[in-house]
Image (cartoon, rainbow, N blue to C red; front, side, top):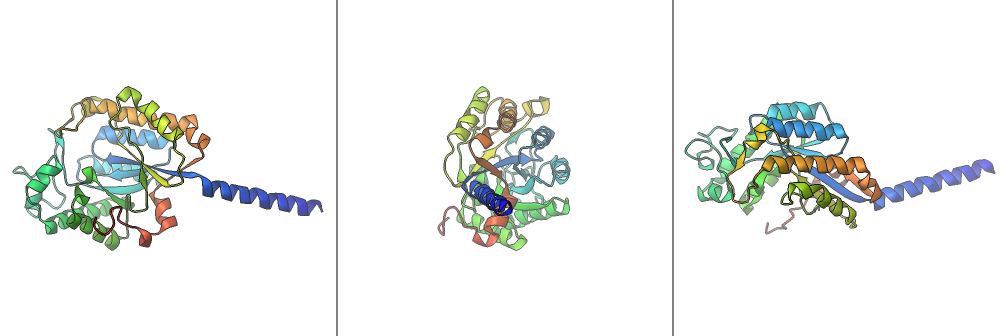
Length: 294
């Protein structure tokens, strides 16, 4: 009789655990721009070492990408993605196409660099075949570097800004067996990006405390270290923020503070990554967030 009771209690407890997991709010934290600079890579390393589960998007067009790859390869628990890049927005710190400027001349300025803004990029009448060539080369560089990329996303939104470009991203994702960020029904949460540096922690905590939906929620972050390297970087876009390095470091420490505080458990939030989404949703079930008309 005692054995029967214990077995029943175990079954009940197991069912409660399963139901609890099913009813938890899902939150996916995606940190962009890994490989952009040493300061960003060091921030990513610090965030990884905090234990926070997240997904990391790498820019293989940038000089520091291999360091970012090495950091992520040492931590396979972090899902790595490719941050498809068609812009280079920093004054005095520019980059160009992996394919080489001669193969994709419509994508670059007179010096062979990507344009700093989407407006300048599209103002140069970029050729779709050249966009496909470049994005494919970025995927191949990521793979050749040893990085286990599992998904694609898009720097400054340029690679999916027009239907014909979005179709290229979808084609390449299918060809290489990759997920695409925002194609799993993710709901974008309010970003910390535009909040004052001193308010980012409070903003993040408020977002987490008020998160009550049962959707898959996506929080996109931009982390970095407030050091001389990053302090020297100035965004050429009008929406660029002054003292960007302070903002990026504030996002880093807001995330670490949130994880260490236990606020995710307190709010019954499960932190997931793109590996989880791909496994549980399936690449075949991805859908464009803008529907057939993009």
